[in-house]
Amino acid sequence: MSIIYKTEKIDNSTYKVLLESPEKREFVVGVNDVSEIEELVRMTVQNDFPVLMPSYKELRREAYPPMTDYLDGIVKGDQAQVQKYIDDCLAVKAKYPKG
Image 1 (cartoon, rainbow, N blue to C red):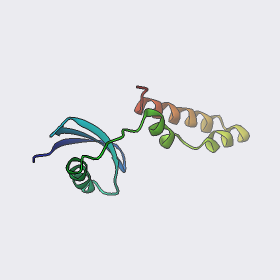
Image 2 (cartoon, helix red, strand yellow):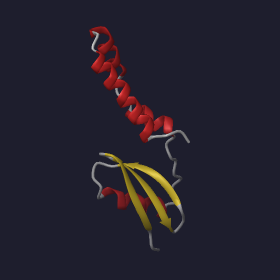
Image 3 (cartoon, rainbow, N blue to C red):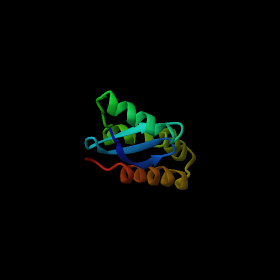
Image 4 (spheres, one colour):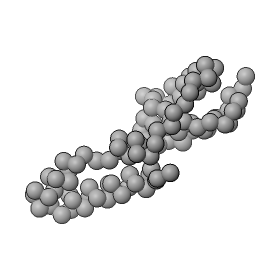
């Protein structure tokens, strides 16, 4: 059986897998090394594992900066730090849009 897929890098250890054959599916995998993806795809197809795609909420939750960064900026009166937190949050929203 031929397995055809593409990958899209999400961040340093997370990839979206776009499976073309034997059936169209997509899923996200977390790996320490990109070489691990092929084995995960093969196992998923051969064993017909159900693939659960994380929601945008789950992806955002992992990617947002810690709230302590924002609170620390407020307490110190550091507007640049507060703005960086806001900008980082907006970048996460753009990276993982709703839907």
